[in-house]
Image (spheres, rainbow over the protein chains, first blue to last red):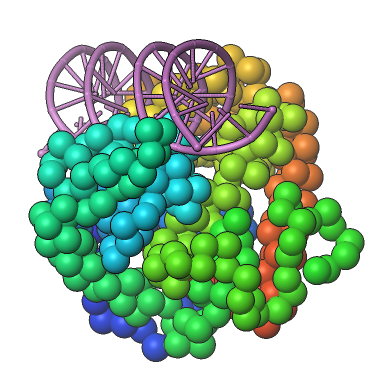
Length: 160
Length: 160
DNA sequence: TATTGTTATACTCTATAACTATA
DNA sequence: TATAGTTATAGAGTATAACAATA
């Protein structure tokens, strides 16, 4: 498991730009947006994965539950397209959720089937929302005020 | 879109805040910074990986070359600490670079060894710099003007 | 005692090719 | 023909545990 992640290191939020304290002063990569993007995502996803172990869910599984909330018309392929997951990779993912009793399948026709949350799935989703809401809040808290509002639009421009 | 650099694969790009045109209008995840961070990183790293295939390098390998540039005092453990890679995972990584003739090892004492770029490694690094410079430029070009300057500081706050 | 380098192992995510059955 | 679901497989990144040798 991802466990090198400490519980979000900085609960005390900073309200200003970090003036210095570069962990690797000689790191020629510290100014590269691509490199920072990768590191930030790795660090944050490790943290989220750790928090989700309490719900016995992986990030991808929790993401599927979030997408499924309130919908009853999505097929495996739909979910894959929405989350950028290959059809083939949806199979073990959904199998795990089904084995855990969190989703069930309902035939649409003889070829397709809708993926639905079970009641246990709804309950688990509620807990997922608590975890992710808090996670997203903590994440944004780490971003200095001056930059916070720009994060989502900037990431959105890079997301697909 | 900005004009000079070839935009990353997706041709439909916007230069301003996206008012709409959400690829997944019903996606309840589209506003979550953590989710967007993961998606953005995945998309950008896939793009960078593709570009680096021309140099027969993986991202992690190119990153090591970049870190090694101009330095001759870094051990495997040092590199791992700087790049957040476990000691154990440095072994096959450096083995590949060594097999490719891009690095060599020089004993510091009977326990540690410095990792140095060979001449071939220096040459490859120069090409890596070309690729990554262009990649970083293209990446930033995708971020709307109003948000561009905020990306690096925001990511930096999340990177450790 | 702590650190370096290493071996071995395993899990996650991702990617591709190919097959069957159905729309 | 195109799509849905699936199987099988592979690559890449990441994580842990454990060991021997040396600082």
